[in-house]
Image (cartoon, helix red, strand yellow):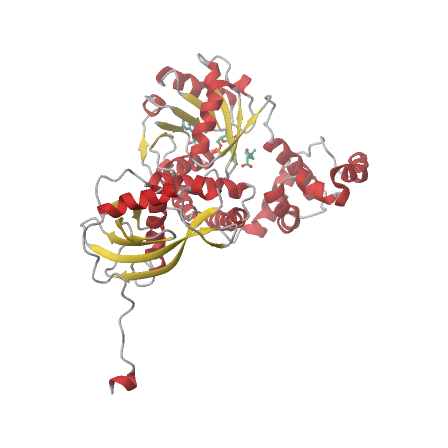
Length: 484
Ligand SMILES: NC(=O)C1=CN([C@@H]2O[C@H](COP(=O)(O)OP(=O)(O)OC[C@H]3O[C@@H](n4cnc5c(N)ncnc54)[C@H](O)[C@@H]3O)[C@@H](O)[C@H]2O)C=CC1
Ligand SMILES: C[N+](C)(C)CC(=O)CC(=O)[O-]
């Protein structure tokens, strides 16, 4: 799959980061003289956020390939995402250049916040493959993408975008500004009035959102939230009680305040007072850390956007497993991320367990104990672990894990992992006992024949003696009194 990005600003940079972190190379064209620095900074923040977001091993990131012009960027591309400024004449010019050089089957997604497919497609040679693919900022974290335009191209775009962790929502009929921005625009318009009329400052409005209904929206949206607000009688009662308020003067609705110099000054200076202590990149990191925490809470509840994270993790685990050609099994690799290094300048101790745990997950998938199997209610729990830390590991090193099955019975299996650096030297070993568990019943249970057959097949390959340290505990250190 060859991916091209035209425009690498706020949104293009976010798209590029999402594709790269999902393991795709991206060919980028952006004439901005500082495009490399800007995209590099976005990528750094995005990489940091993904490290914190996912428990599963991340794929080896793809590369940015810089293209001097649009023709070079889109040559041979399967999917092209356009994220140039929101001007229709510019977008038409870009589409004409793309169509002159891209393969006929290439899909062209536009990040446009407002233009409809019928407007974007004016004058196109193959209009049906130009779609709205409107994301939300930050694109590398927020899953939703509005797909407008329909047809076969939209289906293909949805499949690709879902594979990089997005939640594509196809919009049935085109409308200016799609759906998300129409909703946001209504709130934005009211907020501008409230600031202009001196009713509230930017900070007070933000407080009311972030300490209140913003938290509700993030997990239940509008209608589900209001259904609960109707009490036991639900949505009908809610509509009966609050429906009439729609006609009261609560909102100025369609009336737009003039964004004159005075209002711009007022908003900009209030915003400086509210948030000016942080740089934009700092604010991005604060936003990303908060979003990561929210995603994790939602993932634990298997709810809303948390589901996209869990599904992405299942894909990351599954893609780890390559058909091994040799034994010990080589099922997992990990690159040591800068954030894994501690005050001693090397990989901190719990990251060893992360690498070992990810290798165990890769083994589970290898024997068929994968997401589909777990959906049936049974899983494997690690009940004992012994790690030996043998060598320091620096940021950036590529680690591989060799896995042996030391033994198994109907309910348990014992794994041994060697973590190796690129030169083949062992930096750590891990020995783990796992128990097959029926999660619904809350107790261990025998594995089905499908899993046992996989274990037997692997056990037959394990003909070398066990490592000397296998089954050993931590060595004794004599107590002061005992030594004297
Ligand atoms: N900023 C936001 O919150 C969101 C913006 N969008 C949409 O994304 C699109 C891009 O917006 P932003 O990223 O905010 O703008 P931006 O101004 O941050 O980035 C635009 C980028 O396009 C580049 N560019 C200009 N002419 C170009 C050309 N001929 N070829 C290649 N690159 C070119 C610029 O150098 C710049 O890096 C717009 O259509 C916008 O409506 C969508 C969702 C959210
Ligand atoms: C302000 N905006 C219209 C460009 C916003 C968007 O399009 C989506 C977002 O990220 O809020």
